Image (cartoon, rainbow, N blue to C red; front, side):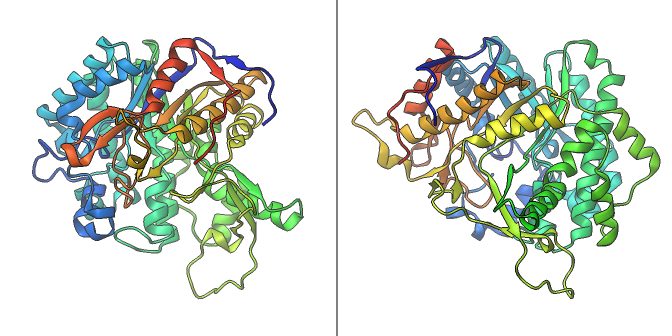
Length: 480
């Protein structure tokens, strides 16, 4: 990385926060019969695939310890904190949108405590938390009836918290569940069905537009609040400049990135995506009226979750036409020789994804307002890095954060409309299947000691960064 100066000034209004989700932190304390989410259902039916059997049942016990956590957020100095409302727990009757007052009061209290401590809440309406009963009865987001029920739920949430929350998001990573379940069949209930995958994609894009419309009807846009969606575009690089590799990257981008970026921001799907869906008989069920709703109700801003680059090359294998279509018909993954790796998570470390995605947002998406909603480094067995004071010396995480923020600030200097950086995660938390194997947090969650909390070295570094608003890029830190 070319050195320009020792310290870079961070704009005063640039978000420096952290994120988690409801299901990954709250635990099941207080959860009532019939309030399982899809993730709870998966855990109960396939607990053996979750590392050491840990899952959402205990999580970090945030439901009971949120005041302690918010105090730590204040100590660190987080400007913003993003989490979700667990749809499956917010209601006791999904068809009639009857609110569970115990859970709703917990969310009330959490929002109030955050605001009292100077931390701005950012609320996502769904972070993989579609109710299990709606998944089992209707097929989850494959059903437009479920979409209608989501709107009923959303209306209750807006009515309850719209007076205090100024940052709203429909989904976190809306492409993920169906990709794991229906496209790649690696998660419960393990069904490879590309048509279902595409219908889920469409119904969630339509749901975002419908929620934006509701947001405006409720006049929340007149209160200074904004509505968006949090996407996880995979910054895609072709193996080479050869036309066949460039084509592979372009089609990958259509199926996995533009499938949500374009309808959310531009209000329409790429014409070539329509052609590919028709060609492979996977076009979703839609109406012209629905497409008009998508066109008329684009988001105010977007959060982007960026962790690693995605590299592809042209498909070299002979495709088996007897199996259902999969987008990998057009590409296969490419591993860059000599790449810098996080050996624990198996992900390439390439901070330049921040700058490259920022330039894309500027040049292809009208320079819409956006921010990094997630970025972070998961490391296994972090306890081995504890010093004599029992604090985890996670210099590798400090370097990771610093290098990625540096690339964002480069982009801001070059005109990108990026408004901030949110670290994944505020604390160690449960992840699908990996459970607590890879730790991401500024705050250690000690499972052997009743899930007690302790700041890591990175938390103190982040605190100093937030206070000084100066990013030191002349560090001797190295990845470990």
